[in-house]
Length: 237
Image (tube, rainbow, N blue to C red; front, side, top):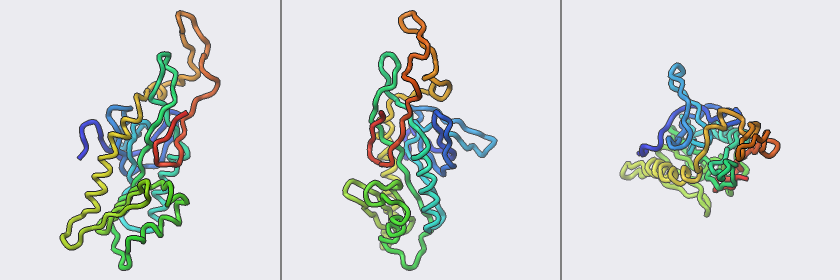
């Protein structure tokens, strides 16, 4: 279902400061942005530059509070510890303020064979984990195979049920369709990030301007672009 400019892999998300996430089951990334680093000797695990990551999906074998907490903690670590560089620069190569769509954090659960399952079961569990579950949830898209899929939108949580009468997994179709649909918009918001931030410290590098050498002409200190905890488009300052 992915077009040529997108691909998937398993591994860890990294940023230009060297921060590294915990292992993520599925990272969907853009080939048009920054390239990942693959390790064939490690079952083809990869390191994905944060700027190229469009969606992170955790896969769980069963529906339990413990598994949801585990996914939440993995995603929350990315939110709290990884920084994003700007993909917008002026004619002097200075990074500029930019509005971006952050990576989407998703959860896919295979076994939901609970006898007392209801549409409220997931939300009743998730609200005990995420304090922003009903306003700006960290995990805003969840699929429970054979039961239903949940997606948070501006008006709140919406649900798509499994069609048990016709044995059609509408929940899977809805989940996959939303994942794919979100990719172009998220990629387009990233601009043109520069791999140079990963190779050297641009803020501590001398610069030649109009033939004259300027010693460390940048504003003192690194410009750090932190993601907010909100899933809506955010502005990098």
